[in-house]
Length: 226
Image (tube, rainbow, N blue to C red; front, side, top):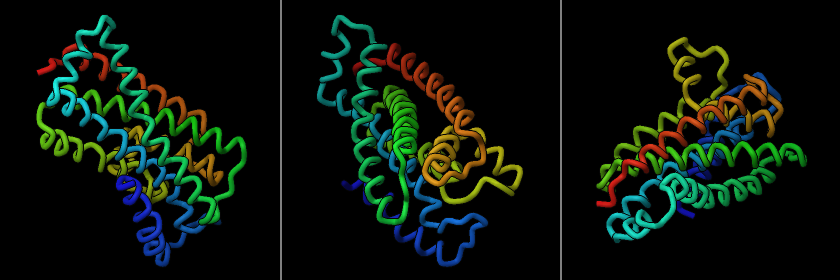
């Protein structure tokens, strides 16, 4: 519930505050415009920080028993990634309910698309968090390093602003941020507006997911229990 508080704070306080001074060229209010970005924000913060569980496993020696199990570390990594997706997806569904009360209209197709994109983004970022966590031995160090990951992922994703007419340097940073394509795909599904096509966004998300999954598997393969 604590991790849901921050997205709600941004949606209602920042969304309403900036919305009172922001004029969009599209027929939606600012709060509705940032709603897809808030869904992504919830996934980003919950999924990446899940990597801290690897450090806790080290502290309680549970990781040792897992690592000596007669299964490959790649399978262990996939299992932990799938397990880590649970919390973020629960928050997504709670936010979808809240979205209905701020005027978001869903269809069966849009709900399926939102769920699919959210699952991919959650897997991508959980894999990233576990990969980073496998290299860390201090919870404080992990939180410091991850802070330099989650905030750029969120602020450069276009969650709070349109991607049109950005300065060249900022536009370059947005296109190398995988969360950009999740936000754009969600905005396409939720509001019917997007910078890129849904298919293009999905392709870039899948490519990013493959890369982070390989990074996580390699990190788990080299990881020491102590």
